[in-house]
Image (tube, rainbow, N blue to C red; front, side, top):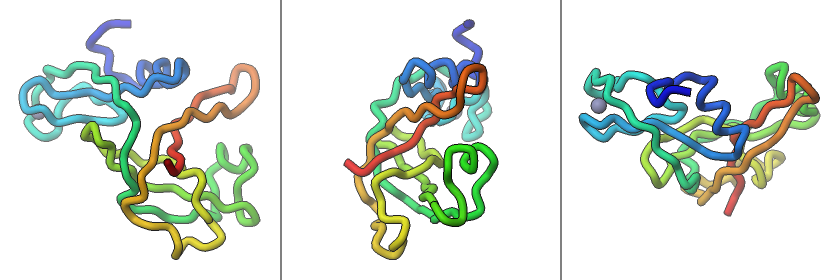
Length: 138
Ligand SMILES: [Zn+2]
């Protein structure tokens, strides 16, 4: 893998190894997760990989009952809703991911700014097995 390959595949390969890697713009310092090859803040292509510690806080969330296929296959859906949130990482970037360890039956009790940490969830079998980034309450 080239150092300049800020593709989803490259990001996924790190995730499969349980490493959370974002990208940082060398020109202006903006950070991205998932990584991207060009900085949308300043237009620079001078990006570098940045390992993230995966701790942050909940910025926004929604409880999802109409699940996409991958989540239906994982057992979520109308009778087993899950929480999806935006997590602001202490290292800079924000990312949308599943939030674990919150009470989805009482979404009004879920607090913005809840401290979270990244966890790596394996889903699927054989060829379809993939690692997903999620966050759980600290
Ligand atoms: Zn930049």
